[in-house]
Length: 517
Picture 1 (tube, rainbow, N blue to C red):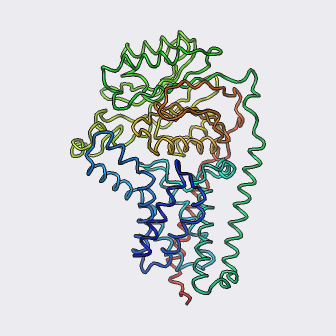
Picture 2 (picture 1 turned 135 degrees about the vertical axis):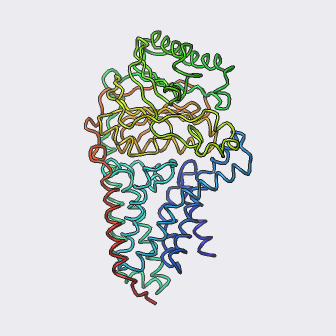
């Protein structure tokens, strides 16, 4: 029972590394609790249970906003609580698999090799899980270091899972020190050559990671040095209440809000205007909406990227519409990965009566994976909508096809002032760094902003404010060829999966290693 409670407490503590708390230093210690307890578990099932408890506490604490979002939507408290708990348990399954693997490797591999094997197993699980849904902006261990720009620069070389691997390696060395201390006191920690090697490797790699990132950031050019001050980009944040957004009686008021934002004084004609997800009060295909938006583009003589629902035969899609300065449609993007209970309802026949407003939009149709990039003044531009920023492989593929600017349209109004908008904004920092692109984000209720290819937030709005954010973006990409990661893919994650598979095979063939003491 003590082990179970310790893992629950450690999992909840790891959640405090993410926004808003942001206590990133905890990531250098609390996973070691799970590693130590799972390695000593009395059975494989017990180790998996400890991993499940750790993961459920981590996901449940991080995603506390799931409960509140359900309540905002009018879902009954017991159903909201059940949904929150079920999601946390589901997202904890990789942690259960990890707990099982920790025990296996601790018993069937040389003790000095165990921390390296644990780190590879976690990176493999992360990489495999990054393609699944449901998922949220919480499940990569590297996200715990969101405050430390120097540390996350390594993502441009190795992708999103290398820093996670390194953090787990450090925690593995720490768990080894805990075990050695327990078995033989402080002297045993100093005498353990394998422990010294693992700790030394982790320290050297962490230092190298920080040094590399510091050097990269020192070479960052001042965005204000761009010719003419750069391109003018306007980001619209209308702050429309989500729970009135689809009320037909509110349409005129919503248009008035956008008209008011766009009527504000400006220093010059914008090169691009970016609207949030589903910014129009209804279908883009309806003339009242489509013509209104096109008229704005013509009046401003500026291209726009507008979030709207569009028709797809008898269905509908969540889309980004690229309008030229003439008001003509120059490009369409349809969201590729849909949100369960937001854009489609699994098992609708049974669940619809219980999920309130979350089912009112109906089931949307996803877009195809290889959609054409937008051609804007800033260069080849890839759109993503809301939830898609949590899938590293989607945006990496866009960058690999030549995108040098990302535009993320979102509507975080569902979550009001919870942790969710902060978590959702921060994950975009990682996508910008990994692919070495400028990222422009427009959010209905915030947080909107611009993130440069180094992860520096050039400008941002506050949550729950109505604003037009006028920013300058360099017309020339800082990294014309993208990043090593964007050109070569998740080779580190796939390598971790291959290494883990080989280690599992070796561990099963080798049999149980005799325990010391």
